[in-house]
Amino acid sequence: MDVSRQWNTVVVLGLMGLALLALNVATFHYSLTHPDEFPIVMFLLFAVFALSFVEVRLERGRLTLSGVAIGATAVLLNPLNATIVTLALTPATMRRGVSTILGNAFAIPSAACLSSVIAIPFHSASSVQILGRLLTLIAFNLISAALIAVVLSARSG
Image 1 (tube, rainbow, N blue to C red):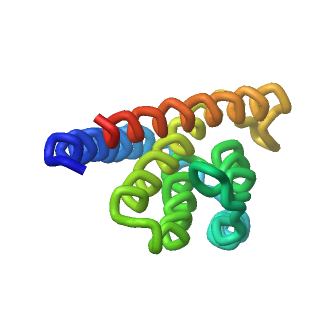
Image 2: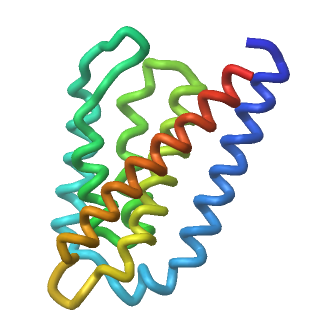
């Protein structure tokens, strides 16, 4: 990989990290006033971590089951906890190289955090309504695809 591609990747990941930080700062008051239950957060943290090691090799990459737990994280948790829980995906990528580690460490938590922000209006006193869950999962899939496309295009030049 030449220097300009590496620089593009660093810039894109840096901007993604700053946007993630800004989004968490902007929603920090909501996260404080709407805390998540500790057992649910820990269960989802463990689920993301455990499901990230179950993988299927594809022609151009790997497929894990962690997206199931990350989708639940986006629907159920506040944005700060969604970011923290999805960072549990990072250890599973340790053997894949620095750019993959950084790409997953920024893109997936960003998608989960942004999807969790989208789910905020659908939270009620008891639970998230089915339409809100569906819209949040659709948004999570679209945001994930867009962010991964941005990171891959920055990597390839």
